[in-house]
Length: 76
Image (cartoon, rainbow, N blue to C red; front, side):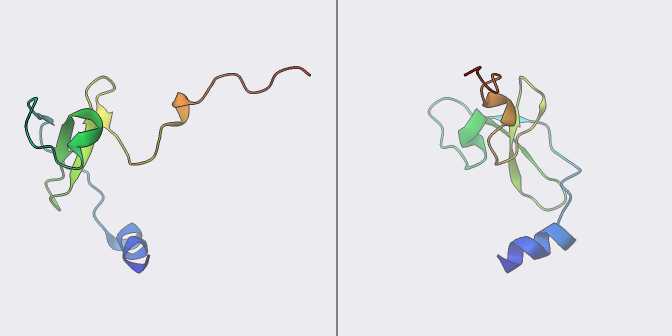
């Protein structure tokens, strides 16, 4: 808990990335590559982050809000 707080305050901003790396089928996957099969590496701290080729952005660890249903309420 304390380390997360310290990382949030003084940690790496992950602003410099490597080119996206896609893992071959049958290869051992890193934790970051398990979600999408592709990952990038922060060039400042070395952390591997999942990358989505379709949206061309780094995927965070939280589930996307857009995955929920678009219907908010139904009439009673």
